[in-house]
Image 1 (cartoon, rainbow over the protein chains, first blue to last red):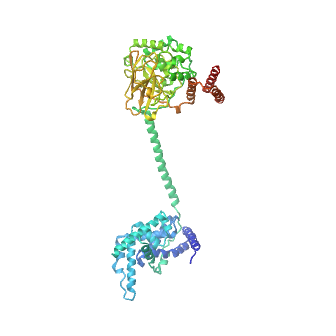
Image 2 (image 1 turned 45 degrees about the horizontal axis):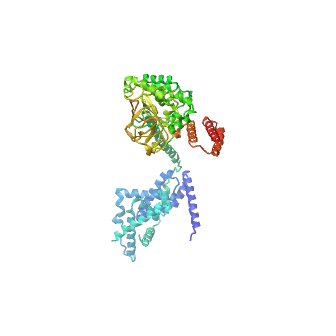
Image 3 (image 1 turned 90 degrees about the horizontal axis):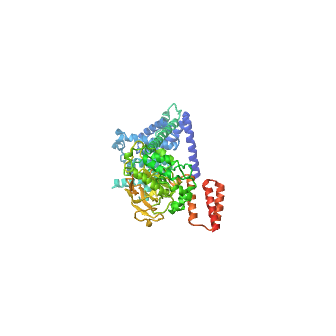
Length: 195
Length: 443
């Protein structure tokens, strides 16, 4: 069990490490940039994987795009939010840009990529669970922009409410209200789907 | 929302299993790192200049607003308000002139000159010739309040002043500065007060000059507020009035003045029926906030006044000189020695009142009885306030004699005050109290 103090120390150390990264990157230290990639790409990929509904290839492509954009915009990072939060925001925007492109809209609902029934024992249950996850993901994607970002950042990007509030420029209370509202809409959507 | 469902939803949202990223993804990302990583931050200069740009926008807007306000105010001041009354601070500067009263011959000559000239300048020139001393002010106030000006003036003053005309008493309160500032050109005689015959005027002026008891009586045109409370006459209204105006050799009281009957601008012709002389209405703490000013006019003895109407702005009621409340104001024809109470102007009125009255059988009309300037107590100079307060104290001392002990205390206090202050009014105050104490001891 991790003590709260230990968690705080980790956060503090991580914050110090972020500052070190930023300073090294701005000084042109390539090794530090590689270290930063090594430490962050897993979470970026994971959040994009969830956003993409389990499409691993797409998530990998979008992760690559996100880092390219991050290198281009690294000069504008002012350090108000955590670096990982800033990176998640870039990844989310990259995902939205990809989704909004007309020729890729249908990529998520491609019937060929839908999971097929597996004849092995227990496969039916797994399929049902997979369908539930997909239904939930679609319901999240149908949320309004602000609610969708809040839900995905919190649950799929593993950002805390405070970090989301910082990056959105609003209070934590407002973020919690957004989450509550999002849950209400998700409940309605999922109930409707079941019905 | 069902809490169980919410928890279940949260669990399902977190439950999504994520496989490890593809094997080569890390290397691909590292290879995408640009070769030239060194970055020069450029936010600071951009923000710096953007902040300055914003400040310049706000600053220029503020400057524009201030400049426009200033120009608008200046324009409003220069054009003036045609229908409304313009209030401006104005207190006549007392001319340090001898207090000697003119002789009867001088008064007659003055009256004749005034009739011949019929020009405001004539009156203005005459103002500076005779002017009261500060010592006269308390007496003026006292006499004004009591309404018995003649009997209470000193004998030597009375003798000299009796030869002055009503107009002289009235117009005397015009100071040099007022007339010099206005200095309208002499209008043609034919267009000026046509109702008044020159011969009549001469006779009238002479008769009035003989009958007039005191130059200070004319300043007893006191203002009272709407409730009829005496306010003491700190401000005054000066309006054009009957042709009895002679050379004004009347002392100007230390009260504030409010001039009515706007003088014609230079080069213009004065309206017909406008009399050449001046009526003075003293105002004090006029209830401007109520949009009206109620003034009291003391009709001097020697003036046959058989009607007084104020057209346009309010009723005219009359009362005896010592009337202090509205109830005592009666709608009767004013007679000698009575005061007329009438509305001088109303802020809500569109037209300015016309004051009409007959004196010695001649009809006199004062059109546009507008107050040009109102002097308020708060803005009066310190010297003038002292004068007024001293005169008021003198009146109180005379009206209600105090106990000797109280007077002794007061004498001590005023003596100390005179030592500290040393100004003229305070010294006079000290002397007044000392005299009152002496009189009390004699009694």
